[in-house]
Length: 383
Ligand code: ACO
Image (cartoon, rainbow, N blue to C red; front, side, top):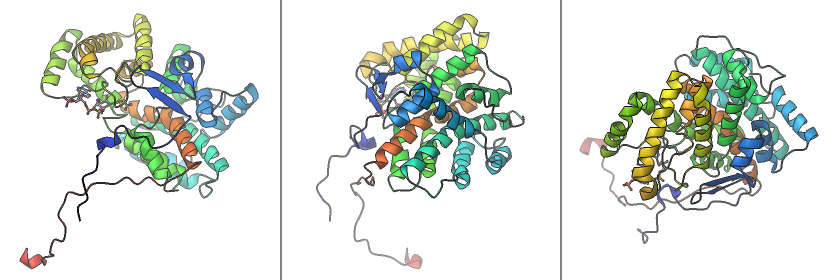
């Protein structure tokens, strides 16, 4: 029996699914807050480890608790030999996000708390996931370069250690700081697609590894976390700044989407993109000719897109647009952009999972059925 057609919210647009105190996004004014702190304040004064603590615990740590939090992260950095073996066997041929998703899923088996779903165990598992996922991404990068795994270095901070494990040498202070800011900017963003799928999985009372594995699978898509790599691919395809206008105009005329622009919530300039753009302008002075060229193309594309679609349609640069030139400047290959996004988003995913479990309810939306009913079964020979 067909019921009256309900109002359908395609893509669940405009639907509130829970209360949260983790993150607030004001899409009209282009503002973003983690636990009440503006993203500008955090990018300027904080660092990734402190932001992880803030997201997971709800407040900024005092010195002693911060030291013990950082110590817990350091202790979890190294990879289980079985997980490392799978990365070694697959990262040369597999897509990095597929290898990452598999390695994270496999890591559950070696987690000492795997059967414990208590709040305390989930906090320990969150710390483990934040720590290990960066090491997994570094290991994937090493294998893809035909290099050996580099063991973590205890004395280094989280992001510095990531770059050390990726490159086999310590980064410069400016590379470390720039990547740390990128980690801070990507750490959390309310109920975006990957956080939502994380919560959907966790809300069945599955476990946090399954939930984060779902989040990684969701982040992979080019409409979400995969847009940073796609945007850089476009800049490379444009080739020279003077080709930008024609390339973009042709793409828009052909109804193509320009990756790194537009957002379901922001109908203003994404504040994260604004911060990244600022750093990109700053680093131009010391940039290689490749990065300078990419920056010039990006700024040309931004100007045209804002003129054509900014105010008219609310399509502005998002966090993924300027990331490519910055990561390229730091020496990170484009194949690792989305895995790196995942490594920085883990604290946000975990914070949401811990919060949602405080007031858990299975997520189960409805679909309005438009197919046939009471169809008579016909045996195969008579079809
Ligand atoms: N380039 C050109 N046109 C665009 C773009 C874009 N990047 N984004 C949206 N539009 C247009 C659509 O074609 C549509 O036009 P129409 O009304 O004439 O049909 C209109 O804007 C609305 O688009 P929707 O798809 O309905 O908007 P939605 O809220 O679903 O899209 C999304 C959000 C998926 C992010 C979209 O803007 C997009 O595809 N952007 C490119 C991919 C991207 O950069 N993703 C990263 C987002 S940030 C993140 O996830 C970390």
